[in-house]
Image (cartoon, rainbow, N blue to C red; front, side, top):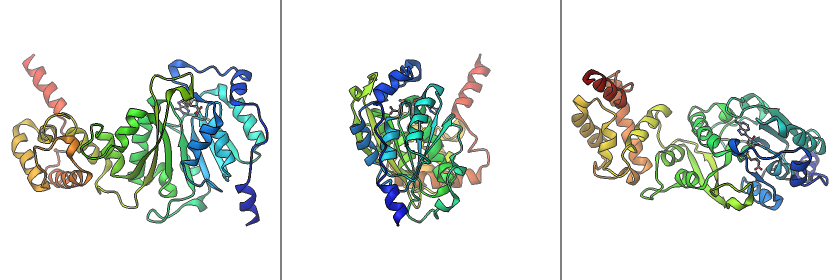
Length: 334
Ligand code: SAM
């Protein structure tokens, strides 16, 4: 009890401001790397509070940069914070933070796309998937070019319960370009409804919890950011392999403005397209004249279940790629 109280009340000692750290270590943002920093610690505190209660938590922060969010996480009373930063220029500033928070901050100079978090925290943190989420959180403000491929990779990890989800239903809070945050959380029928909405929402409870205006960052990026919180669901809304769901969803959204049968038809070779698309939609009980944006996650569940059966009946079907068929045809013509 005493030790958890001590952990919960930890505060960093007075330190140079983030602006001073940037000056001291000459940490000018590299535009090509989309580095935009948060300097206002009241804002980083507000962002970190949105992750929930971090008392005694094990936190994995991706892309800490000069350490604004890092300080707020440390002040939230975490048991341990592990940060992974790719740009070596930030390591001395982070080291200064580590000295100010003895035993709490672990710094890894590495790439979040390859770093293996699954062995980094104590085994004892692991929970059964159906149990409450473990006290492990992922937090990050990464360049937009990294956060979108990363969330796709992590959603696949959620579906396979590996990577950061070896601990159980690890929660994540990440920033995206505002438009991407809106796509991730878009409801059925909305303009932003897209492939990302389905892929995120069939596996997680997804909340767009905060919009950060561009002017909050230094230097100011061209667009606003959206902070999105993900909690993996105890039971995914579609119980099929990730790659199969991805294929159905990608094809469905191929022609966003057309009826859904157009995109879904591309799952099948041209010679059998009409017949197989009809069979898919009829067996899944999906109206072929709905637009892709009007399809619910439950529609996608039925479509994936029926497509899976069709793939089991025809072992070549899953490997079929309509672009490849088009390419071969044009080669023959040429
Ligand atoms: N989190 C800091 C903040 O909010 O002020 C910095 C944000 S800046 C947009 C993104 C940070 O992620 C930079 O420090 C950059 O060097 C780092 N970064 C970019 N790609 C990375 C990668 N693949 N792995 C780890 N860090 C990365």
